[in-house]
Length: 292
Figure 1 (spheres, one colour):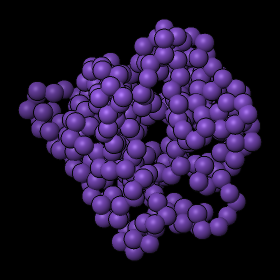
Figure 2 (cartoon, one colour):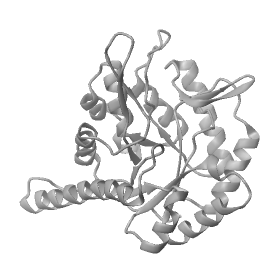
Figure 3 (cartoon, rainbow, N blue to C red):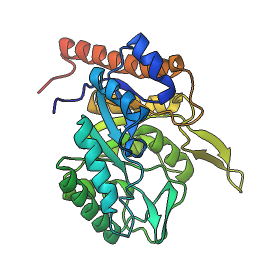
Figure 4 (cartoon, rainbow, N blue to C red):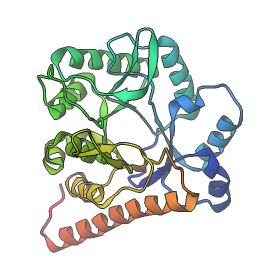
């Protein structure tokens, strides 16, 4: 499998298909949610096949319940493997979250307590998933709204240990960092500085909704319904300065805009990547930054 370009890409939405085919935009890659393509045929696969012919592809799972206490759903794993084998995506990712509980499925990505017990469950589930798919997955940091009294581990320590023990890569959702930092009252800049950035193979940028909780405090909801805001862009610039460019996705899953608007947000991220590259080149030439 060839390497994903270290440039900006966009989520693929069916309503944008005709614009993409007609305009052939200079987008590095497209990403889709796995669960939307687990049927055998129809227009979703016809469209995705055409997109895959012309662009790199990333597949993002939202329903596996990696952090759930119950065993992984083998039928879901089988459908996922069939999809991954069919399209050979450059990257595959899942969330650090749970969404299943006997006897049903919760249509949400719920946080989990950070304990050695839950760490071991997540590691076992990732091992099972990677063995089933025959490839590495990327684990995405969550957006959170509550903390658990049972937690005995810091989120970054938890994610670092999971990655080390399972061999998975990481997907750093910068918007999730910002959302969680406001909701939980911690420092997003410090989070980025302490994150195991060397393991990051993809970044997500997205919009969110701001409201208030019952006490009148700020509450951010990870809604993916708008362009990424300036504080998120500032955190992204920090990641670029630390890590350099990696494939960066613009997520937009609600209040879907015209393709031109989603493309503009993708180009905004690409402009930040290009600016970082020019600054980095200038620093190397001036001798203020050394390359290995």
